[in-house]
Length: 51
Image (cartoon, rainbow, N blue to C red; front, side, top):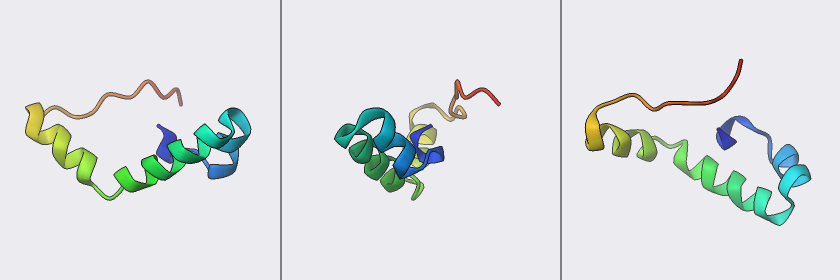
């Protein structure tokens, strides 16, 4: 979810913690997280993001 947010919006909402969340989210975009999820059960990830 955080990977969909801009750095500025995360920093505005959570300050320094928002910046750290942004860095971690961008690191997970590389596909490592998706590969890890598929290894644990083969299920697609669930999101609570409201469109």
